[in-house]
Length: 328
Image (cartoon, rainbow, N blue to C red; front, side):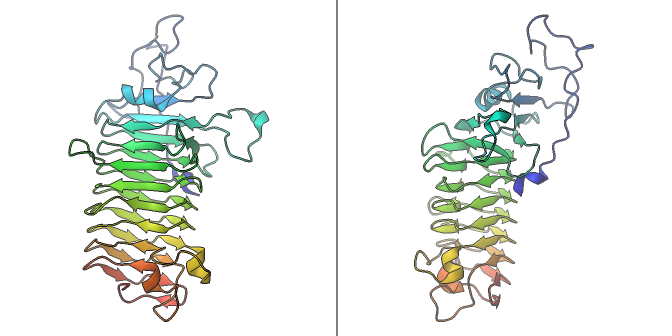
C-alpha cells in the first residue's frame, strides 16, 4: 500500500540536559537541539495527544501542536522544515477502545516553499487519516514551490479534493510539487488536481473510486512537464487521469482499472481511462489499462482514451495485447 514506503528517520530533536527550556513551560525552549540536518526544524502535530496545544513551538514530540495550520506558520522558506503528523485511529474498522479517534480535520493552504508534510503511520497501510474541514472542501492546497506531501489517507466529506496544486493569478505557484505514498478514497470528487502546475512528481498513490477524477487538471494550457507514474487508479467515476491541455507530461507505469471498460457494462466509457484532450507532446507508455485493442467494441483503446496532438503513446499494456499507436 502507498504509505508503506514513507521513510522518516527521526533524529534526536531534543537534548534537554544541554538545551533546557523554561521550567514549567512545556515546549518553551528555543529551536536548538539536534536536527534532521543543519538548518531544518521538525514540527510535530498530533490532535489526539493529551497535551496537544498550538501555543508552543511544536518541536518536542511529547508536547505537539494540535494543527497543521499552526505548524505551517512556524516554517521558514527553504530551511528544510518537516511537519510530522502522527497517526490516528479513524479507520472505519478501527476499535474505538484503542483511542486516538480524531482524524486530522483541516483545510490548509501551503504558502511556504520547501516544506515537507509527512504522515507518520506505524502500520504503513494507508497513511494518516485526513479529511477536509467542511463538506466538499480541500485537504491541502499548495501555493508554493518545492512542497512534498506523503503518507496520508485523504478522506472526502461528500465531495472535495485531497491535494490541489494551484497557480493563482500569477502570484503563487504550486510547481515542483511531490505527492507520494498517499491514499484517496471514494468520498472525494478528485484525488489530486493540478492547476497550471509544472514539474510535479505524482507517484505511488492509490486512487480508490474517486467520484469524478483520480488525477485532474483544470482548464486549457495546464499542467506541463509533470511525471505521473506508478499510481493505482481504481474505478474513478468519469476518468482516472483527466488533464485537459496537458503539455509535455510523462505518464508511465500506472495501473488503471475502470469496471465499465473492463467489462463492457453500460455506463461512462468515453475517455474513462486517460484523457489528454487539447494537450500536446505527452509521453504515455507502459501503463496497464483495462481496455482492449482498437476494434468494434465500445470499450476499446480508442474509446476509453484520448491523446493530445503530437503525443507519443508507446507500448501501453491492454487486456489483449500492447498498443502500438496513439488512441484516436
